[in-house]
Length: 144
Image (cartoon, rainbow, N blue to C red; front, side, top):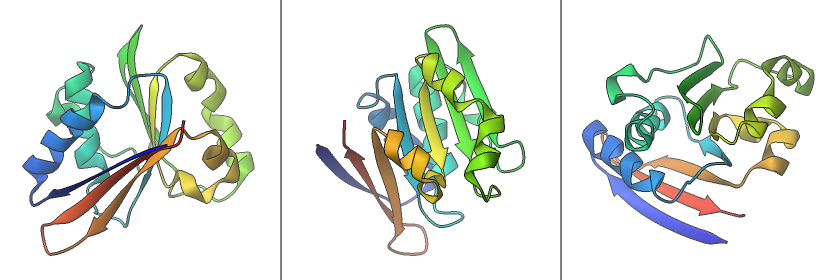
């Protein structure tokens, strides 16, 4: 198990941190993103996607209403999921999580901690804690 902790003070710093964290998250991995609404989860994904070369940071948006965004193809693929609006494990079945995992992609799952089946499969989590108006502590816990 590994743990890394960082502080960011702006959206630009959070994007840059995503670029650094991408080096610690070689696919395939399933990582839960934990933090309050607006904590910077999607902003971090922008940096990870850019570092992996699957999307420009300005192409990455929150999947709150679509539930899943897929970036890249082939060996370089990133799935960004937002499970905030889902309530039951049964609703997860319609997302095709097994196929995403079998693709060898990096999966970044917001609100995955709500579901025992996701938590059990996760390789780790990234936790966002606000420490000020624009600052936050971002902690990566890798369990596998």
